[in-house]
Image (cartoon, rainbow, N blue to C red; front, side, top):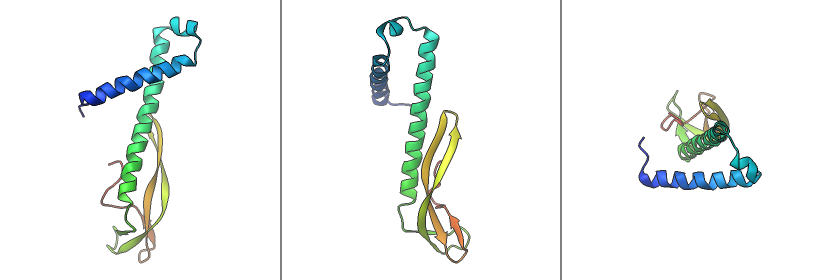
Length: 123
């Protein structure tokens, strides 16, 4: 995915805000003498946190849209299943652990829980 110039500009803006917030918590002399490796480590930690949060937010949004209906077609018998309580999902990604609520449905005929098959979250 190629990022738009507008999005790149927004990322730089957020990065400056985060840097200011991080450095506000540190002593001024610590910021002035920080080694580049420490700056890089800190930036990687922030970047991983942002990435995990972005993945979780996107998966949560997909799940919300996929589970917006009160009923869904059972993948086994093709009968109508009713929405039940969402199931927690937790995945370890390359950038950290992400979690969201996956919409769940129950088929009374098959007596099994299932997840919507039309819009599979994260695929």
